[in-house]
Image (cartoon, rainbow, N blue to C red; front, side, top):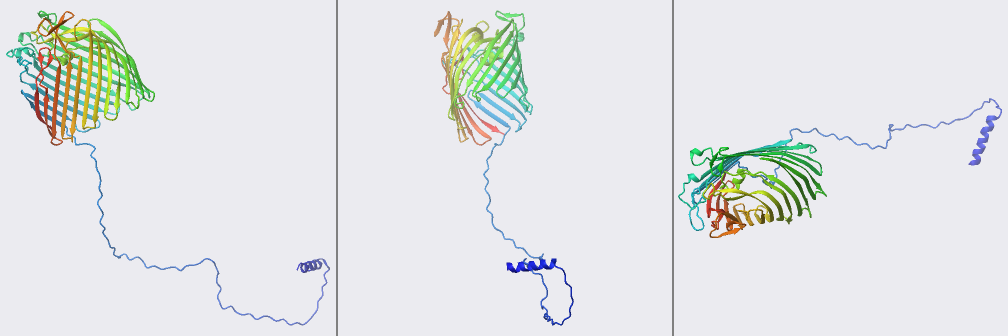
Length: 572
């Protein structure tokens, strides 16, 4: 094949480059032409893509009837929980006790609101019976009545909150500390009336890194009834007092800088100034302003385990003579084991403003003709710990070591009364208090509390700390059975109380040249039962002084023995 191709290529090249010879000739030949035949099929395109036939479908029949088939569906079950109980804005409590002791109490509150609240509270309690001592000696008329009215309004806004409160108290009673059952009750009667108003404005803007101010204004008026004789109508006591405090504070993530500027004023007046009614009974007027300054800083350190509040207090007493006092103020605590055990320590001091209202609140049988002096605590050192044991137990142990100057003590007034009123004696002392607390709470079903206190008084001049106990034990408990039956019980025990007397006699002791007698132990137990018929109606039974102890509340003042009160409560 290769040889043939080479010969053919050689021949073509030779003929291309050789000289051309042209010649012509004539000849005869025979040519046969093949016959053609016709292809019977038509031409067509041959492709490898398959084709499908088009299916023609009939149009939709709009009159076609549809059929429905019902299948039963099982109803769903939804578990609901009532988050808020129905709120009843009104609460009424009515009852009656033995020895004619009517009781009434009313609460009126606004309905639920996120921004505003207002309420009204009224309470009345009176007693028309007699009181006897342990020897069954009947005392002078001892009836009393006590009525209080309280109105409250609060509003909570995004940048501030405002609270307003006004209270009226009317308390009538008798100086019954005499074993004279036929004494004239009107000559022994006394009545205190008090109006107390308070306004609190607290700013809290959304930006916490701003200076906030809390303003508190407080006003109180206290007045006593005029004496039994109309000619002595001006010889009564009245007192006006007001407080104005500005508390500013600035918060950072770990510190709170705070400062308080305050003014406390108490104006007390008795009788006619520069006039003498009788020996040791003259007109009195005392104006007592006190200025306070309390800067400080509170810090949370070590992952909020360590809290420390450091500052000081400057108080300027501008009563008769101006005196300035400086008191350090330090408090620190440290949380251990997720705050289950918190030891603490602190030191502080204060100038406590005495007033007729404060003394009357402790002992209503005080003579309204009193000399008021402010109490000064140069230091109050406290230390102890607070603890939680599981989810139900909590308790603590603390101790206070105080120095107190001008402490007021109640003693029997023998100058302006026949021994059935009290006056004041002031003394300085070193005071120690040890207190232990223990509590148990199991939800809303059971709540138990125990408090034990030990007091030590080291007096400067007086032989004893008159009327104050040395040992106190307080027990209390509440048991809720299926939210139908509610049981309450409490017991108060106070021991080693003494009263000052002025002459020797039976059961009279002497110390430091002073006569005194024991007031005996005070054991007061109370029981309460409540049956809740439904959420709106219940009945109650209250037994006071269940041990029927005629102990002395103050010298010559035995308390009411066992007292039973029963009644009902209504919500609407």
